Image (tube, rainbow, N blue to C red; front, side, top):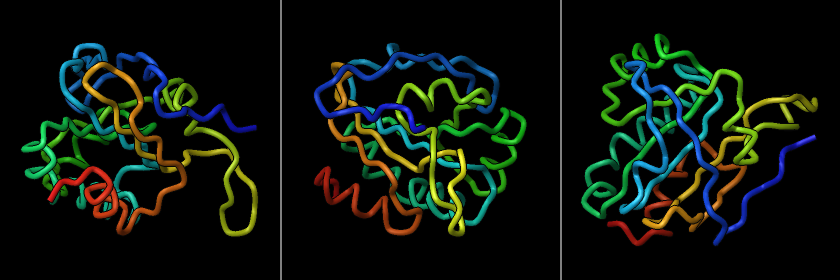
Length: 157
């Protein structure tokens, strides 16, 4: 059973999560500018590292276009701080250990893993507009090449 997927135009589900430094980050506080939320399975794994580093390498043009980038995983803050330091990540990583926010965004549920159906994180990215509405809901994205495709979609050079 996979949680319901979000559709463009819908108000983004509210949340407050701790970042890697155990500071609370509230989505509502980010209104007034667009936000990119990306959900990834686990810090410091090969695919997640590739995706996180791609966001790092694209951060300057995304920020120049007004976007705040946030990564969300089930990892605890102490692992997130190590991930940030190890890979020079320059945006905040949020901790959702009980996957409640994952469920609100439809990123927790059944997925295929080496031919078997398991419960887990569905790698997904959401673009939220300045008013807090879902502009793009991209589910089952690939770690490699996703950020480049997202920049094309958003017309960010």
